[in-house]
Length: 102
Image (tube, rainbow, N blue to C red; front, side):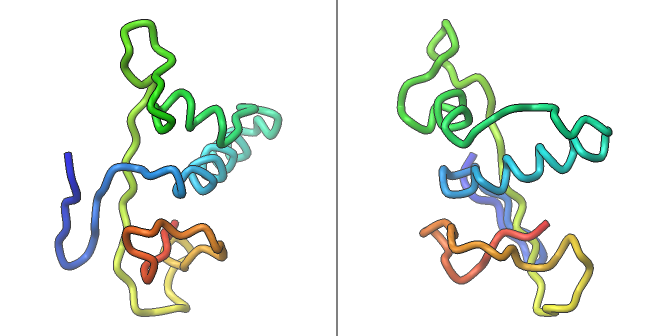
């Protein structure tokens, strides 16, 4: 699957530069579930297990997981919390003008 785009959202495959935010969302879910010491994942774990390094760790040569990023278009910097741009300098080079949002 490539990039799917309409006026409101863009869905694309996760890129390595997205992985720090993926880790942050996994931790948010663990915190919500009252498991603050839950998954002890690192970006390196996701790079390895997601096949981002070109070497898959599953026995059949496939990545252990697949993930996608949904980017919501917003022009309102004071919009809902899940639409505020991330405060990160690790934007993916494919579209450096549009930060990920949550």
